[in-house]
Image 1 (cartoon, rainbow, N blue to C red):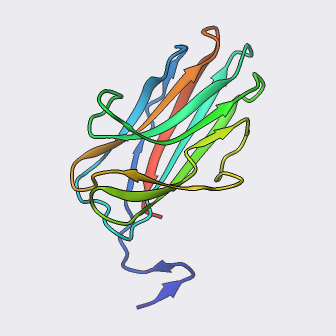
Image 2 (image 1 turned 90 degrees about the vertical axis):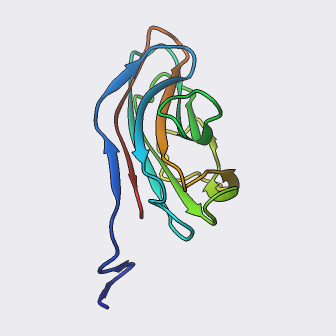
Length: 168
């Protein structure tokens, strides 16, 4: 089998994305976009990567952006927090959020992410001081990766331009 650095030919590449823009000016955490991850798409040993591009309009205050996994395409029930980033200044207007997940099993406490919370950063390829955290995601059922946001001031607005999940 041929190999390019870090990639085996024949490895299927899975991309799930939603490019429908959605906005909120709510001061509570609000669903913006979701991507269906069909059951058993990812298994033990996979490393799904979540990426979302957020943009804030208005210059009145900071905001929070979040990524979740949930069994429904909304924030009802008990969504699993994959990451939250808080922009503490009004001047940060765009944010490209990433989260890499290591799957260690199909159910139970089986997925490791690096640090769910970051405060005050303008760019987030990964946290500056990563802390591995174990979360429970059932990869054997249909699930959704969800982008959500919260404005500190309702006179600001946050838009998610895309949400993408890939297997690398």
